Amino acid sequence: MMDAWNGIGRLLIVAGLALAAVGLILTLAEKWPGIGSLFGWVGRLPGDLSITRERFSLYAPIATSLVLSILLSLLFYVLSWLFRR
Image 1 (cartoon, rainbow, N blue to C red):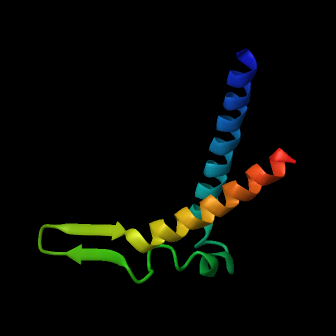
Image 2 (cartoon, rainbow, N blue to C red):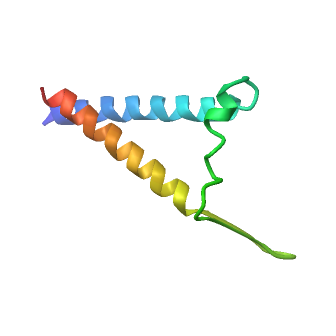
């Protein structure tokens, strides 16, 4: 039973570090030439809703969420396939 918790703990640590690395890259992307253009599409796809009124603004990145979901699903599928071998 402890082996299962140990594996889950390691997985959560790796996932947290990967998420922090992606966040750092996205934060610094505008300051590094060339990298900012790679992530320029994030939040600007057709299907991302942006509504602005006098005292109200709504932003719902629906298309960006779908694209990121597909990319992450493919990534996790490939990783699970590699670790099963």
